[in-house]
Image (cartoon, rainbow, N blue to C red; front, side, top):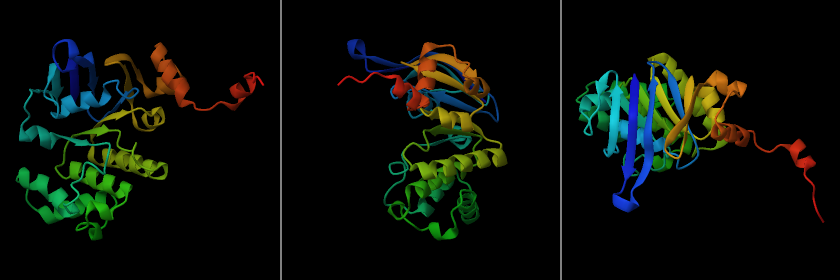
Length: 258
């Protein structure tokens, strides 16, 4: 469903140019959930922005559903591919009701039966009809992200690009949103590409993953290999160790000097 070949993204020109993504390649099969993992600044979100068309300054070859992508994207592409952003507080217009947020993409793409589509989209993300005419400031963070997911789904896409969709939410809400995404993926037969720094989220959501560091893919593996600790690259091993958190037994072995 997604093919990336030798993708390079550079910001700036001349001596001040920054190569945020450095010739990476990978593929995502139809119906798969593929994770891009790495620390902040590794280039993960930049890859998503290039795929989605938000960043037109890239080189390489990008294909979605067999179609080669150019710098400019058609309406058909945006109906096929939708994106859910990290911050539900910033991705929804503060002066637009939920109804307007969901009806606008339908109007842009000339899709009819608006009332039914909006009501269905809200129901699919666990929001009742009473939410339809609320404003973002009247919603919790989790409810806002549900609206953002509904906005992405209302056009009936095949691919969702997920840019750390739970990182700005309370821990108690994160699992609800991840389980919601899993259910929608099964019901709609979607393909997911998920960017995150959280290996626990990857283990829960993904089939395969690529690890990025300084704009490069340093390792690609299945989630089963991740769970077995079968990583081979030093950077991936460091991420795994960091994800384990505080180790009380190792702390006891440290010598404390008065």
